[in-house]
Length: 30
Length: 240
Image: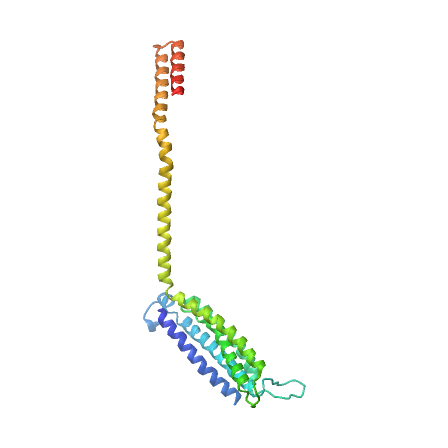
């Protein structure tokens, strides 16, 4: 797997994590 | 495995789907934990910065629902996920963004301190305690961020640098080798120059001695003649 593809996986993971974290916070606190 | 149409070894060697998944999950988990921590901190600051939940005491400011658990859980989840991510990064030899987690944590929390310190939700003036915390957190996150970005910049052109460094090293070693060879020659030249005459001289003396010994063995020279010739030969060579 190329370095560029792994970097794309990394960036996708960061975005997915932020969305997941925000969803989790709002689900738990409301 | 069949998806890539290769053998198990090829899949294991090149793609490693489980590793890629764990890499994704590890970084996504870390990112989610940082987000939850950021939002939880904001929720606590919104109620004044101090809250409590549970326990036998009367609580003045109860924590927003679920925030206490989220704060603790996000710290542990973040650490575990970061560990998984770093492990898989090394296995896949891919880009490692783990160094950004620290700046992300401190800069995001520092932002909260600034926002709520400069514009408190209850309308009072500046909260200097939070502003000072904000300055400290921004420094703690910002300085390593600069260092991490500098490292990332270096690692980008590291192959070129490595090649250049290797070329320099090679050139230096060749130069050193050439210098050593030249030095050896220059050192060798005087000694070989001075020994250029001795070896023939030595060879000559030895050869003469051997010839004399041979003559004596054959009986052409008596012992006295041999000794006299030998003394003359050694005396002559010693004098020269």
